[in-house]
Image (cartoon, rainbow, N blue to C red; front, side, top):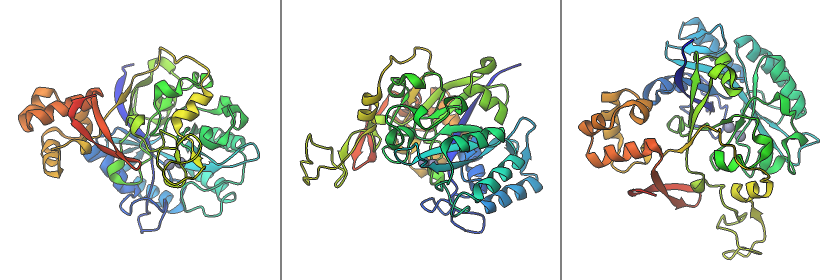
Length: 391
Ligand SMILES: [Zn+2]
Ligand SMILES: [Zn+2]
């Protein structure tokens, strides 16, 4: 059995159906299932995509059509292969706020087959107000949902677990995920944009789970803003699930994400004006209401020393942030080297320097290694690269 490296982004939303109907209302109009698959193939160069919102009836129809036309081929070990290149794993994001939750939490379910997806969608239909839309509040407990996903041979992952709103540790529980979830029915834990492995690993109850890093993309451009490299025997549902449980040398090789320091939820801010919060009241507007940052929340929960065995978390700067890497240069790079994943991971530095200016080639190599730093842009937005300097 030979193992290979595959790049995966497992949390991509659907903005619209084929006919233009809204799924994720805040998602982009061009973010359709077909466009996601195409963008994953080229320019992104992802091997595996987890597409959330596939429970929506019109998306299921689109999926069926793609199977009929032969663009998607169902895989024996679960998932679908798109045009021989990209593996699709269909999923759903659900909002839970049951009697055990202190506030709403978001969780992800993924399904190996069309049959399982359709069965889930039918079950879900009776428990939400609008089956067509993304991330609906379910009238069921978190553990009922976990059991349903597992009964359909699915994969269950709590989403962006530290974000201050709508997440497990953000609003859902006092101290422990066991207040809400069955710990044995969790396949991995998604970190989200304002945390990384070393932060999350200070929570002892998370030591038994693999961490995933995904984009939560609401537009085509944001796909693969976070992702992971997986070591698998094949790019299919079963292998991904086995990798999350560390079976047979299958595993996460590395997590790639933005530096959490720059994430918009990292520090505690004033709830009214979003400026960094003062001790008692906001120094800018006087409000006493705060949004607790991810960093402060993790410090509250921390009870363990991070494991030495975790895969590296690489703070990678997306290519679109590099100064001098405009659309024209990007097109040239893609023309020469194939995909964004090729540029970030496979092309030797010397080959890059033959196509772009040496300073830019150098920055791409630093972005690859995680040694490039971004300046905070303020107001929760990411900034520019710090003169291309190491930070
Ligand atoms: Zn969410
Ligand atoms: Zn999401």
